[in-house]
Length: 309
Ligand SMILES: Cc1cc2nc3c(=O)[nH]c(=O)nc-3n(C[C@H](O)[C@H](O)[C@H](O)COP(=O)(O)OP(=O)(O)OC[C@H]3O[C@@H](n4cnc5c(N)ncnc54)[C@H](O)[C@@H]3O)c2cc1C
Image (cartoon, rainbow, N blue to C red; front, side, top):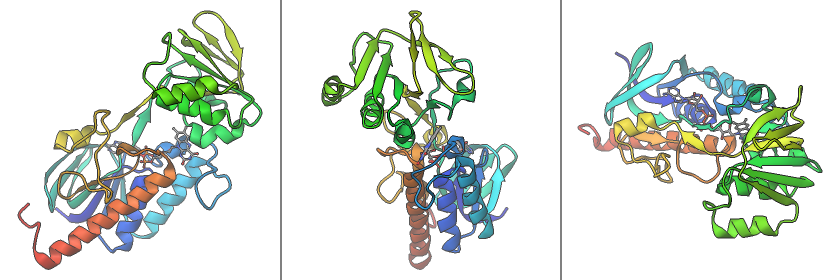
């Protein structure tokens, strides 16, 4: 079976960029992902990725894919089931094939939790958003809602209040308990933010775009946008099965060189523990992971180290 220098798992910004750097270091590179594009392909308008004022997320992802294909990176669409082995002799088992790799980069991203309400999918990008850092600027002088009560929800509300006229937080508990006290204070002091405690969203209102929400207490609110901030789940099962260290929240613990605790395994993007989960940071970490894989391969070639690991 062919031995790749690097197998990268995940076809989002982190995986594509890792593949780009790996190929440009002239490493034999395979990129395996479930589907083209990753999370960014769900973004209708990406306005914070350097070089484009505004680009559709799927178009951006396809540009990334074209670029790696032009460098002779093999791209396979398949789901990886497990990774076994040791440094310089890993086996990556996917649904339709098995691949050998000297180094493996995990770029499997995370899933944002959804409300699972009727029409949530159709209204995503049409008023329903999962990323205030990405979309707050679209709501200048508008009225928006935030659902959630953790740090991320309060941070989203505070950022939104810099653009919107009014921000409503909807939270299922009777008070905030999880966020840092300073965040709670900031929210309480921001006159544009109002909180409704003890409620859930029952219905999304509006046909072509979100026009408001109906709560489970029967009240309705007119809104131009709704930001869903009810948490995320990292796709770190593969990593955990291999014994890669993860944080309490399940994110992969990678060092600043994007190495994990297992020699020859690197990680990048939304699946690692890092504060800003964006396409640009995922891409940067993907580049760093590929660079570390290259440096390790070079060093092992000269010193002979890593042969028996
Ligand atoms: C609606 C929305 C809008 C957004 N807008 C913006 C924006 O405007 N600007 C911005 O910078 N960021 C935006 N983001 C965030 C951005 O999409 C992410 O930060 C970025 O995509 C993370 O890149 P990644 O490569 O780490 O992970 P992902 O993009 O999530 O890619 C990971 C890929 O790995 C695949 N995968 C997982 N497990 C396996 C497996 N076992 N086998 C094979 N493949 C696997 C997944 O299917 C996925 O395709 C947005 C996110 C959402 C949800």
